[in-house]
Image (cartoon, rainbow over all chains, first blue to last red):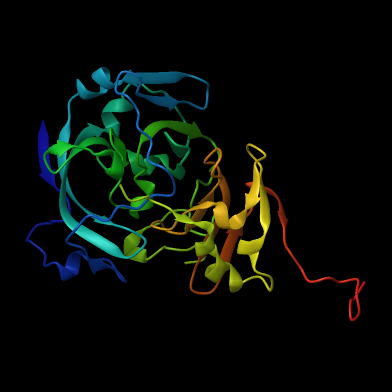
Length: 199
Length: 96
């Protein structure tokens, strides 16, 4: 297990320094959802990586939770303007899941139980920047917050951290997801305030 | 438990900014399951980055609306048609 803290770089920064432009500090954890909450039984849950060459890598719940995990402590930033600092998660790094995946794809389309999708460059999932998270604040991740497991990619606006994650499709061309096709920014960097398509 | 969605009347205000007619009074046909019903009967998820209106029959997305500071983004892919009630255009003063 590895425990580390993101959001602190060298000396401890103040809360104001950790709030991207246009964000306010939330003490609670707002629940946002574009549809009904899926309830996926763990014995039927699976996570899949589909490569551009047609290969499929699958993990059952037991297999995923048996992998080495990390406990990232990260700041999260929702495009609706709330930020939450120092959130504690447990999850498997995408670096672990991609260890045996051969791909030259540049893009990833993340898909969820319930039909949600979101896209991002594959590089943004690698090198310790993203996890499949299944515990939050010391408890199993609740369905309202995306349980049993969600993507956690905290350096982008939180709509990219897909709840109820089911899999990742690797693509040679970018394929915009649910909010990215409806006016939201294709990349979504909170520090550059990339909220809407033209930002 | 409180429902996590509103009824389609919640679309009336946001859509009034775009359309001259009251779209919440229209009848929509779901592109996924074919169910026909008033827009006001759609299930509107508003605790999200935009409004997402879903079919009460199959829960597929019928309409999405995102309001940025300078634009409205409207996605009607999930609706085959909207039947929008209009005043009689054939009678006296009509344009037909």
